[in-house]
Image 1 (cartoon, rainbow, N blue to C red):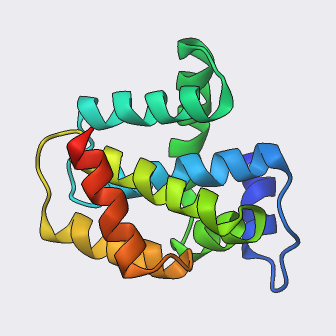
Image 2 (tube, one colour; image 1 turned 30 degrees about the vertical axis):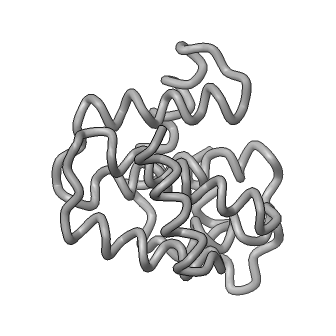
Length: 145
């Protein structure tokens, strides 16, 4: 499944993904952001599971299984653009801002924000077509929550 999804994500003119594939692309993006600082902390893993459970109505076991698929995809994917393009094509702007909120929640889960994560968030927001201002507001909402 991962190989098939990677082929579809890396196709010269990829078609919009099905909902299941969009879930995996979002999860892989969450994992990529969590790993961007070189420390894939247990708190970040738990936050990814929470995002997947809340967003897709999954129980803990299903979320952990989906996250494992996402980890495998993230490890094999050549770049972040594939994930963001798939999400941008499948999700309207308001929900992409929700994706940015979820990403900020993962970044902040371990209590440390570093330059690599900030850089990854700026790039990701841009690739998703989310303005800097909306990303900043999303970060503030996550910080306040």
